[in-house]
Length: 251
Length: 128
Image 1: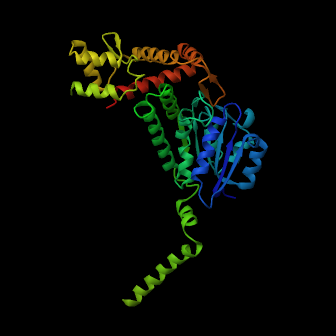
Image 2: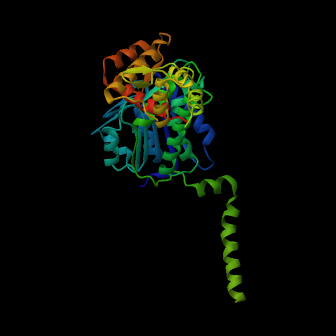
Image 3: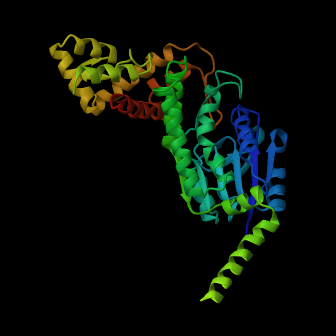
């Protein structure tokens, strides 16, 4: 069965410094989720291999996001438990999905293997992904900034954009954050020099593979479910048909 | 092009960037602040540095660029307090001195930071 549109699975571990990314993603999901979307977040202890497999099979989501430690051929979930390695059957679970792994190095081998397994799109990093841990998770722009840029892709996809358009938004957001710390209001912050470098590195290693035209949450569906009652959704086309028939009769 | 362009360029930079080495002329390295002072004095060196800024170049060879990048990162990291500040999604955590050790030793991580620093230097010198 094809993966289900408007259905999202987010894997958000907390241990081993992963709370820095998870706090930002939780806020993004809270801010940008739309009516009609089915969104499941596996947070902390729930971000384990068994639960992820169970939810992939139960939900069959079009969109899969995983924050976790990784290497060239492996991605792990909470407490660095290995979820999938190149050659594992778990890679096949990514088939037909848009897959984002916020992780180090997976774009070298695991990302291409995910595409080979039939995923629509893969986004990840080909080298080390960096973040700042000088303050507590979620407390300052310094610790959020690398993830705000990286997770713009998810923010845009939740708002109905295609993978390609979301990717462009993500790159723009990187430029915005780099500009903020290099020339903007943040330039004289005590850690601005480090943050501009971290963002520059992460932007340079970000990798997009596969289809750019997939819209996991197509915009008309969001608009219809957000602003229009079902009666209006059907009434507008019906009125158009009546109007066109009337014009034809007038000829 | 004019001295005003150099003044505007200098003021766009973060205060921490204004005293990091960036430009090379005849084998010597200069910070943006020195460049500004020389341009304001209309010295011969100032004219050379102004020409670099106007054309968005450092005036260095690839080897020199890498050396300048290393000096810059050394100065940035040595100015920070020694506590964990940097982490990666492969599970590594670094204090400034630990990260600097990677850079000085040209490890894969060090090379990642050095290459990015060269890109960042281009961004700075061509800022308008």
